[in-house]
Image (tube, rainbow, N blue to C red; front, side):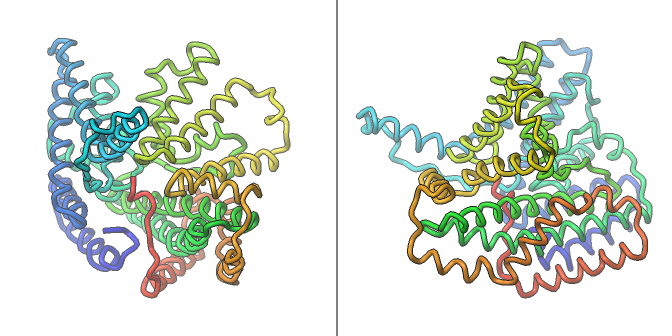
Length: 470
């Protein structure tokens, strides 16, 4: 079930809100947990067993890690069990097939194909497993570190892990950020209204902008050899699509949280306004960047061991961050590129020529680098990514049928979507700031955006959601 669907908008959400506000006090967390499992089971009920297993393991491990009377060895063991269990689930369901495929390829190269695995293992990727395993695992680590207190109430902890507004695509919420809210939270008309505003703007981003730009990107990447301008146009369209797709979902998740009394952290902060790749990762998917920093970058040594080691640590973190997104060499290369750029910026320092340029030039250069890297993220295979980059830089001759793309690429509707997307990306205020003070004019704009978004859902057949794949 996705937020931008009729069954969610007209059935699940109204019923959930009605039941929630009719439910007294402490029963609300149990109700939210139940609703979240219904929401998650919509695509495949068996996925719920996996999430419940992860929840039970981390609840028990958190209990052991949080009891001071237990020995340090026992508490460390609990953390190890939590980490190995969650990473094990990810490995089996997300990376096993990729690992076996590359293992067989390696055996074939060295002439030992007789020892390869003939049985192909194929698992259906559970929705949101990358998100809830990271979230659940971080709880045990935080309890062990003393950054959070272990939760005795299993229902409250289950609610934290399964909370449907951010279950399948984040933001990744650390337990300490909502621990008190699970115990007690404030419900006000103002908070609910801001939640509706967040949700409506997120819906508009998804339906009005991401979907329109996505059609352009799909056509461009499906072309065997687009022209140089068309290839860049398609790559920029994908950059807009993935931003509005994911930031739109994050807005909707934050809005839903507010409707149910929760305040979730900001997940995007105008990332395409960044003046460097370092700044980009402070603004893009903030919850993932924070998670990687807290649980991977700092344990590796962070920036405490010199600039050279810092650059290596950044490269390792981003390499694994790319792998987190998917079991593909494309994702690994995408992460490696960002890791190299982050490391290069750290080694160059602020005296580098890059940092002496005017701000608009730095923003444009950063966006250019991000767009180039997105090609590996979007392309289905490594050869396709290399061929597409060749088209972008004139290394591949445009195919004769590429002229047919112009009819769609530069239609009034496509140009309108791209133009509005650019204006929103670089000129519009952030949702987080714009919704702080609501008035009649803003309320009218919010209602208009929601109405037109819902209206378009009735006639649009194209409504993918990129981060459901991760």
